[in-house]
Length: 70
Image (cartoon, rainbow, N blue to C red):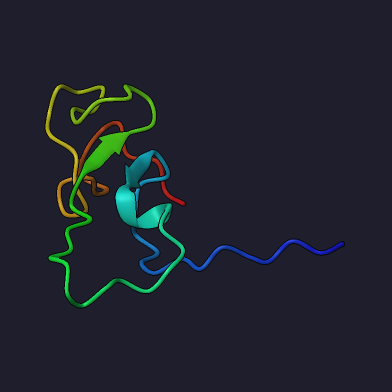
Protein backbone atom coordinates (compact mmCIF):
# COMPACT_ATOMS: atom_id res chain seq x y z
CA UNK A 1 0.00 0.00 0.00
CA UNK A 2 1.42 3.38 -0.96
CA UNK A 3 0.80 6.50 1.06
CA UNK A 4 0.14 9.69 -0.95
CA UNK A 5 2.68 12.47 -0.50
CA UNK A 6 1.51 15.52 1.39
CA UNK A 7 0.62 18.48 -0.77
CA UNK A 8 3.07 21.15 0.42
CA UNK A 9 1.75 24.54 -0.65
CA UNK A 10 4.56 26.77 0.52
CA UNK A 11 8.04 25.37 1.00
CA UNK A 12 9.03 28.06 3.51
CA UNK A 13 6.58 26.98 6.22
CA UNK A 14 7.72 25.98 9.68
CA UNK A 15 7.26 22.27 10.34
CA UNK A 16 5.65 23.09 13.69
CA UNK A 17 2.97 25.41 12.26
CA UNK A 18 -0.53 23.95 12.22
CA UNK A 19 -3.78 25.46 11.03
CA UNK A 20 -7.34 24.30 10.49
CA UNK A 21 -6.90 24.07 6.71
CA UNK A 22 -4.45 21.19 7.14
CA UNK A 23 -7.17 18.95 8.49
CA UNK A 24 -10.11 19.79 6.25
CA UNK A 25 -10.20 17.49 3.25
CA UNK A 26 -13.30 18.80 1.49
CA UNK A 27 -14.17 21.72 -0.74
CA UNK A 28 -15.52 24.67 1.27
CA UNK A 29 -19.23 25.44 1.10
CA UNK A 30 -19.53 28.81 -0.69
CA UNK A 31 -22.63 29.66 1.38
CA UNK A 32 -20.67 29.59 4.65
CA UNK A 33 -18.00 32.19 5.48
CA UNK A 34 -14.68 30.36 5.65
CA UNK A 35 -11.68 31.06 7.82
CA UNK A 36 -8.73 28.75 8.30
CA UNK A 37 -6.67 31.38 10.08
CA UNK A 38 -6.77 29.55 13.40
CA UNK A 39 -3.07 28.68 13.80
CA UNK A 40 -1.14 27.00 16.59
CA UNK A 41 2.36 25.74 17.23
CA UNK A 42 2.89 21.99 17.42
CA UNK A 43 5.61 22.51 20.03
CA UNK A 44 3.61 24.67 22.46
CA UNK A 45 0.09 23.57 21.41
CA UNK A 46 -1.12 27.19 21.64
CA UNK A 47 -1.17 30.28 19.44
CA UNK A 48 2.26 31.37 20.73
CA UNK A 49 5.57 29.85 19.68
CA UNK A 50 8.39 28.80 22.04
CA UNK A 51 9.76 32.33 21.73
CA UNK A 52 6.50 33.81 23.09
CA UNK A 53 5.54 35.44 19.78
CA UNK A 54 2.27 34.80 17.91
CA UNK A 55 2.20 32.08 15.26
CA UNK A 56 0.67 32.34 11.82
CA UNK A 57 1.57 31.72 8.21
CA UNK A 58 3.52 34.99 7.93
CA UNK A 59 5.13 35.26 11.36
CA UNK A 60 6.55 31.73 11.41
CA UNK A 61 9.48 32.33 9.11
CA UNK A 62 13.24 31.66 8.97
CA UNK A 63 13.95 34.87 10.93
CA UNK A 64 12.65 33.26 14.13
CA UNK A 65 14.94 31.13 16.28
CA UNK A 66 12.31 28.42 16.74
CA UNK A 67 11.68 28.04 12.98
CA UNK A 68 12.20 24.54 11.56
CA UNK A 69 12.14 24.18 7.77
CA UNK A 70 9.88 21.53 6.25
